[in-house]
Length: 104
Image (cartoon, rainbow, N blue to C red; front, side):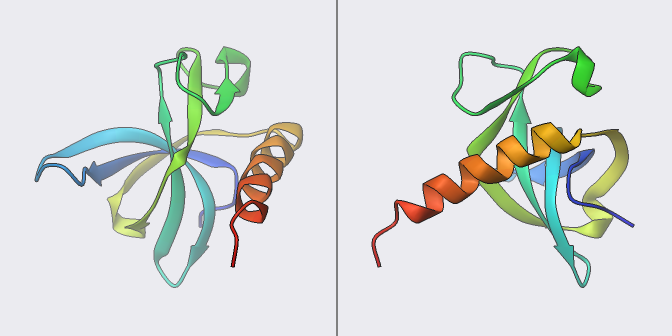
C-alpha cells in the first residue's frame, strides 16, 4: 500500500514522446489504483522542494511542483524513501499556495 510522502521509482511516459522511463516521484495520494505523484529531478537548479541524501535519496534532488501526474499503481517499481513529516508539510504548503493563486 502506498502512502502520501512515499518516494517511489516509477515508469513514466513523457508527454512529448512515446518513451517510458524510470523516474523517481513522490506520492501525493492514491485512490482506487490511481496514484497522483510529483516528479523528482536531480537538476537542483530547477524550482521546487529540495531533497537531500538526508531525505533518503541517492543525490540531492528537487520535487518539481509543476510536474504532477497520475500513474497506475502497476507503474511503481519500488519505494525508495519516505519523506519526513516536516518535508511533507513543506511540499503540501507549497502546493496549496500555488492552488490558492488560481483565479476561479
